[in-house]
Image 1 (cartoon, rainbow, N blue to C red):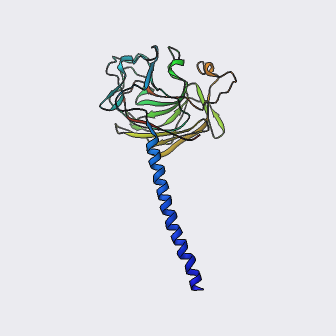
Image 2: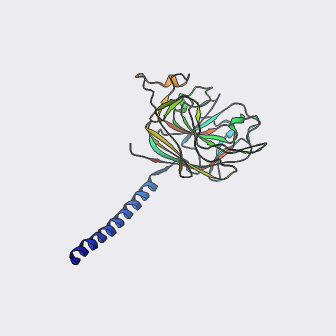
Image 3: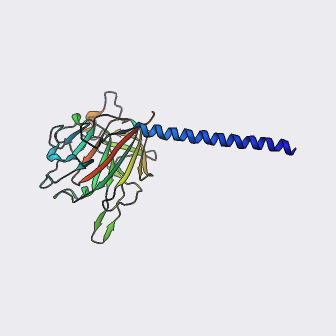
Length: 274
């Protein structure tokens, strides 16, 4: 009986070792494959794959040289501005995407442009499922899109004011959370506040209009689904197709310029299976 019992145990142990080795090899191959498939939206050299659009200006005009590349950093700069004049800017990547994981490393630097909106202090964004820059109207402030909001902490007279990061805002759009249509403009995440000029890593995992997840430094802070056009919005209603389908399952990706200087040292994307 002892011999009969020991043989299966030994065999089982061998099987576990082999399975473990195969699993480790598979995970390694998957990680290597994922690393190979990341698309560097920002190449560290120039803005050749990007198109700017500023409020009140034609598509392609990089107003006051706001978007630029210096020392391998994609920068939103305001040193050529005397003061804020209402020209909100967006820098659009050339390709539309549907199912993907977007990762960016950013930091806020310097002072906000004189006269910039108070809410725009250390405020930028990654715009998802957006319209094309060519489809925007000349004086349109923001592209119809889903915004993953980038926020830095604010300091008031009484000390530090908590301010969550990677919230969701919805210019011309709506989302669903907990089976309820959310029509308010912004919804806060559960992230901590980030003060100072340190680099922050954010990720947005997008599965068409089924679910979108926001992660800050690897931790999920917000999720929602059923991204859709807002038929009440003056710009969005012009984008509704003939069949009346409001659902947004793909679109452009753009970076904002809202009066606060921002550095991006990495903007990369991993295409996911649909």
